[in-house]
Length: 332
Image 1: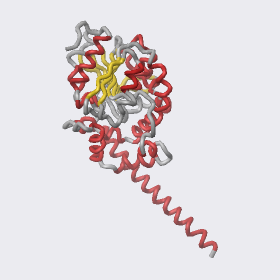
Image 2: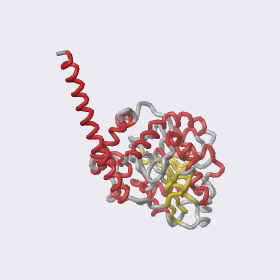
Image 3: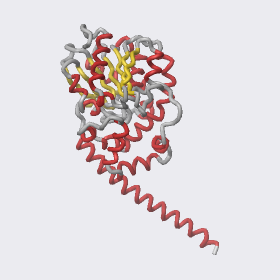
């Protein structure tokens, strides 16, 4: 009887473990298949540049080198450069030389592992990737998480940087946590969650995520198909993004004291209805701390100003280039 009482729960646990292992194999197979399909449907738009034995994906557009101010476009969390190629690159192409990049570990850029949890490390990687292009004091246009990378870039190489344009930028320490998804994905259960998402969650589920991100504006027609949410649903991309976002608070806390020493032109565009990166916590604080920072608040604007109010973003880029002495005439 004792033997039976001991054996039964063990057998049940072994059976459950076997079922979970079988499910894991199925989930892995499904994730492999879906990730291959996502990558085939949204291949690199530019080229892969070698850096430290890895690769960074970048896209060049606009005017030839030496004929117009240089812009570097840096995307936000869980994104890729397609966020900019949907609309913004086309609006800027007549007046600038443009380089859009996938940050390390996202899009088609390789990861540096734990090292690229630091936005300043990411900035160093991007500078090395862009060095062969001969950019001259580029204007960094950065969205959301990308703003921390742009600030990290300026903190280490201000003399070689023309200006910053930060769109809904995540720049400062914030109260509270990042929510259940980031806590779960960063926990021991994270690998299982990423596996299940990549293997089983329908791509249509991304529509709700984008609606929340763009609110109160609508998601532009065709944006989701162009962006390719599957690239962000890949297991490796999820893991890299989670690691970077979960580490961001410590890094912006470390970086913040250096902001006040910056003197290059900084244009801030931030919506007062942005619930992803709060205006009072980030944009308004940076405007108070840095004498060269100018804040434009978009009334009833959300977290995606380069899509909801592209004309204001283009104007801010023009102001930044002029303030940096990269253009001779002030913008209209």
